[in-house]
Amino acid sequence: MTVSEYDKCVRQYSDNLYRFILKSLRNDEQAKDIVQESFLRLWENREAVIEGKEKSYLFTIAYRLIVDHVRLEKRYTGDETLLKNRHSPAEREYNNAREMLERYLNELPPMQKSLILLRDYEGYSYREMAEMTHLTEAQVKVYIFRARVALKKNIGDINNIL
Image 1 (cartoon, rainbow, N blue to C red):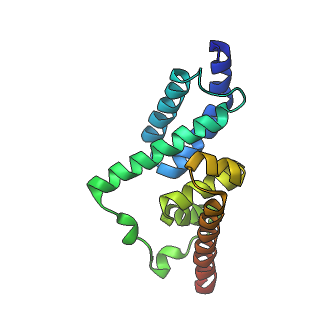
Image 2: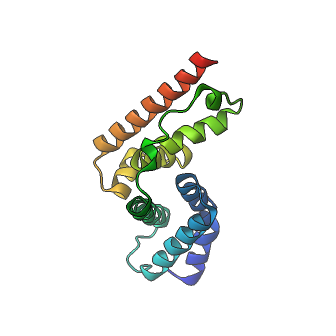
């Protein structure tokens, strides 16, 4: 990979990579750090990256960095997802569907959330996601199915309250 090819990758993929990370972590500074680290690793391993697979490589690195970050945070702060699984009816009455969807996405386990974002926001195939996460295609499909069931259930609960 030449410098100009690397610059092209930065221009082409940095925004999508940033959005993916930001939706996963919900922290602007951490997202920027992971984008920077992902591109640094791309440059350091430029000789090993197969031509045409730069995007996949970047998202794989970013995904792994997100997982590492989440694990590190849990180690120090505990698992807060157990505390926020249910919300009062007053909290659920949102008019903004996007806000509700993001809220429920954040309640998903990190693996399910990442796979939903990769599939539905970034458009990756099951095979590509399996390669990135070192899961089988069947496991990827199961995680996505479970995430969608959870999202449908939560959204259905909202419709019953309203």
